[in-house]
Image 1 (cartoon, rainbow, N blue to C red):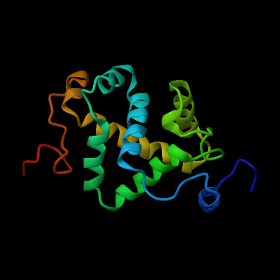
Image 2 (cartoon, rainbow, N blue to C red; image 1 turned 180 degrees about the vertical axis):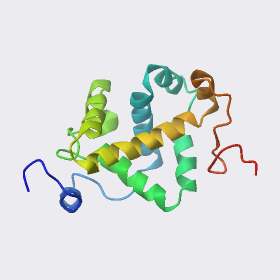
Image 3 (tube, rainbow, N blue to C red; image 1 turned 90 degrees about the vertical axis):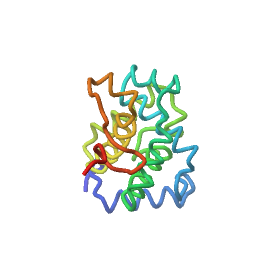
Length: 167
């Protein structure tokens, strides 16, 4: 195996070794940390208009994410693991040494671009999972519907279902 190839098993061993060394904390993210991470991630993924809605408090991506994650069951654990890896993961998983939410905008953009464009499928999958959750919690908010020309409703977060909730 060359230096740039990293299969899933090797990646998981590396992640385990990193966690064992105390660089990557084990366990779930706290609600407060998850909210900060999601705010940072969603701001970078949806762009300046979305960031303005988040900064103004019009959209609370942390609360929306908590509602969606509670309704997803076992899938929530995988997404929580992806968020944990994004927040605390370090090189070679992600090109950073500080938590993702503590990076400036350019640093966050560089990390996300590195994951998105990586030759390692596990890094692209990490990006895809985080991006999917970010878009889900952002675009499920009624305040975003006018900006994309969709009258809604996109989803009923309280039920954890996509659609109007009608049979």
